[in-house]
Image (cartoon, rainbow, N blue to C red; front, side, top):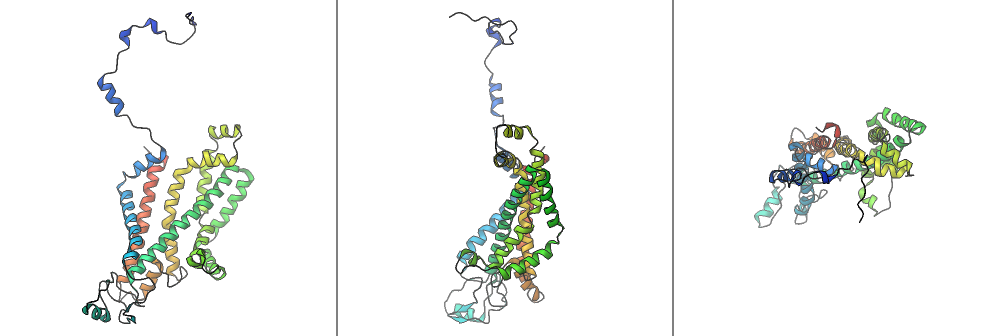
Length: 357
């Protein structure tokens, strides 16, 4: 084969001019240096690694996991229902009113003395002879469900609205943001109360359907959160998109004919992931606190379904005689809200690129 002539202006290195001694195998120390090099990782994996190095965030995750496991497992173990009025051998136990924790009524004690077994009332009973522990468990279920589902609704509406407004810009962005400003100017709690009262009166569902079992109060709560609390998420995502859409890779995607929907899904929203995760995590305790407040003033979930706010409101009437009834739901609200806030702060520290060293 004829040897190709090398161009004198070429920058390619001519290996024939170098001796073999100049290229030696790597030493053992150099090989070990390759072992200590960090492995390739993704944005999500790197963020989770930083999150689990935060002791407060890890403690919050453990507390939330214990609460979730408790509200799932406890109804399987405790034989009482949240609306069940205590009875013994088919007879209503009128003496089981406002029992202290881990105590029995006279009728229950007589039943136990005769050889019967009775599950203890861990948190005592309420004024209507219902087991208080199981009512706190179901109240925690309701509050957590409202918080998580309301945050998902806020995330979906805010993400869609903010994405469209930020990407299109111009007059469309101007009009959409003025709508957001109008909603921001409304007094939140007054509008929530008015909407809640109106929706409870107007909403009707087919008997036996999923929405009917869920109840008009729960559905109206979700609608209220969806109508009012998405504006903060929309503004946040819109601000991120206004910055991201000016990058070169967005221009490259437009130049090859990518549609706006695909650009938003594939290129813009993944770069807003840290903001979306953090905002959603911090929205959950806000929704739980709002639901508890509405139930506390009597326009939350309807009886006999309990929530932590309605339990606290009921305990307020007998605060001097039975103060422990207020302690249990109050501690549960504090644990949930504090854990979610600390977890949200940990997610912000782990996923926000501006806070990374």
